[in-house]
Amino acid sequence: MSGWPAAPAIYEIDTWPWLTGLGRRLGRPVTLADVPGEIWDEVAATGLDAVWLMGVWERSPAGLALAHANEKLQVAFHEALPDFTPADVVGSPYCVRRYRVDDRLGGRDGLASARAELNRRGLRLVLDYVPNHTAPDHPATVEHPEWFIQGTPEDLAADPAGWFPAGGRVLAHGRDPYFPPWPDVAQLNAFDPGLREATASALIGIGEQCDGVRCDMAMLLTNEIFARTWGRFAGPAPEREFWPAIVERVRAANPDLVLIAEAYWDMEWTLQQQGFDFCYDKRLYDRLVHEDADAVRKHLTAGRDYQDRLIRFLENHDEPRAATTMPDGRGRAAAIAVATLPGAILWHDGQFEGRRAHLPVFLARYRDEPADLGLREFYHRLLELAAPIRAGDWRLLDCHGWADNPTSRDLLAWAWHDGDRPRHIVVINYGADSAQGRVVLPFPVLAGQAWRLTNRLDGRVFERGGDELATDGLFVDLPAWGAHVLTVE
Image (cartoon, helix red, strand yellow):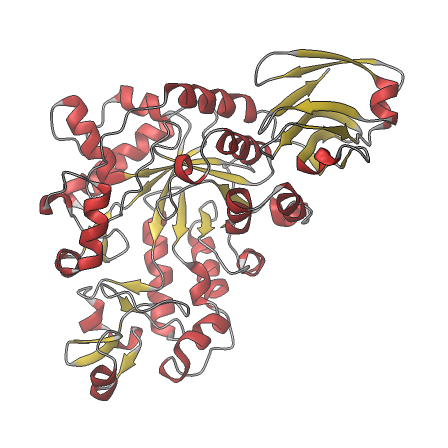
């Protein structure tokens, strides 16, 4: 990770609809080759470290045809775009025909230009890789069928939704163990040595064009999950796991490339141990969206070595928009949490403006939605203030209340500190009612001095005596979903 910050903030852009929107804004077609400098200046907001250009690879014509024919997808397209037309469908970025930058997006040279513009502004570039499956018309389905899960004509006849013919063979559609097959992709065989070699080569090639790679559904390739999903069709599991063998090759070619795993089912620690720099923290996402402060607090008791290699998020191209799942104050409280915790952060294009319509990845443009200017101002202020906070030591803080006032249970608190000297204290009321309590500050150095606590969110200043802080803790009284991000001086 040489050259990368220890806790990067990454901004995901859905490349095709983003370029379509720029074209409408500028009155001309736009590719990655000719995005104006002032647009890259807008992208390079203070507090960001990298941009993930999601969906730059060549999309599958076969996958596009399947998308046009799929009734459920058509319903989703009309829900996302009230004025939907068939021309809006450009195919799935996760139905990859070849790992070549789509010419309609600017091709390899256009991507190189975009990377140079980002690097010039101090931002790194992240791209995708899909290790579990390819498009059904990927050249390898004919040239290297041994890389894929294969069946028989009998399997195809018994389960036509799970299999398809290709090059005189029967190949499986991609899937995970909990859902029906995906009808537009072909399942790779993680146990095949040739496929492992091809995966390493593909990642090395992608790594030559970017600074980090996000690996889609990375946990599906672990020996245990893959064997459970595919059983006898996969053959015997190799002695060595998939990812350590791949990562070893990639690191030898490009030791500075950051690898990010999309991970679910509590597989984060396993994938960290298998070589990934960061793994999705879906568990925190679920708790912030659906659960309470206590559930979030329990999640944050994990070791720092684990938390530092998680990537926290409130939305991405797979999840609903945060403005719909966490409206009003809850969303802002969750954003403050994500922005001030250890680990990496993933923000999503449109999140700062409060976009509400979730866009299927098959579509080339966004719905027209007015920007929430107040929310955008909040996010940009949050990014700017949070960036210098997340350094040094971090610890979760206890909160307590009183027998006749249990609202302190809704308080979340943590400190960034240098040894025994606190630099910043974050307190969030993760509840729909006001909350009062005392935050325990286990820093004896506070005693015997006067302290100034400045809330970076709104500029308010609190003068507090050190003896009270060290003995009784910091008293807080926060409205519903309210927060303090305090600098201690």
